[in-house]
Image 1 (cartoon, one colour):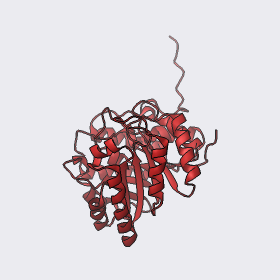
Image 2 (cartoon, rainbow, N blue to C red):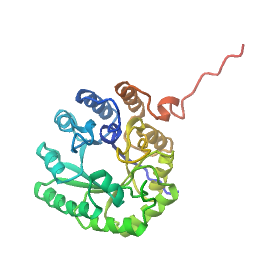
Image 3 (tube, one colour):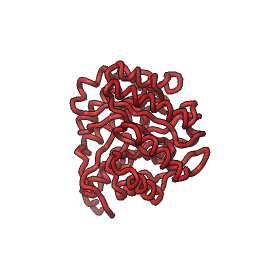
Image 4 (cartoon, helix red, strand yellow):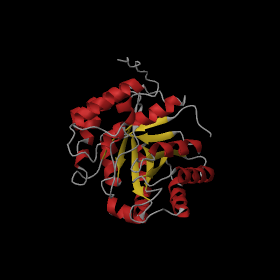
Length: 309
């Protein structure tokens, strides 16, 4: 296996992680969680999204949150998800300098998610790209359902590569292949990512996995083996797509960091502080999270030998 010496984590709990939570998390709670995560050494965040509040009420305070955390962010990268040009304009009006435009490789899922065909989203990407160039904004793109769609099934490789080609013709900082509903498997991840890296070697890639069927960590291993070192994760393993049946959480940040550290792969994240953030997260959302290492502790934790009676 070919593993890197260092991996870079983009924390998405404030956006993807919280968007399905029943309790509306207020700005003060999000700000506190952000500060805990920066204390743990997290340096990249997808902090919110500029979508219609009726569609995703949890994200209605994203603008207010940005105004509170931008000064405390220091060198941390703050990314706003946008579904359209209007969202991009709203984000940049507040001073956001990095946006992530998301649309689906699957036509059916894209219609459910943003009420547009994939072609219409590609056309809007052209407009957003021009807008970002004019306003000196860093543009990322996430391709949802890259590894499968709950409505259409597996995505043909040629179709995915065709979309990637059209996106990479523009000025894109990071391209994310997203397993939106947890349909990916390690073999498929390795094959698709290897092809994308081979055909588009200059494009910076990030991978986004959900743990819907328990394969999130193994898919990250496959992605690393194919040469990717940038990954989205969510504290506590929270999250999921609001417009996909059976959606469950993202691959869990503390579980990923724990796995990487146990393999002597660096992240610049303090696992102990990360677990404190995970405890705070449970207090905020009011329920346990799917995190394994939060419950069991790290692999090298030693216990006293029981005294025989």
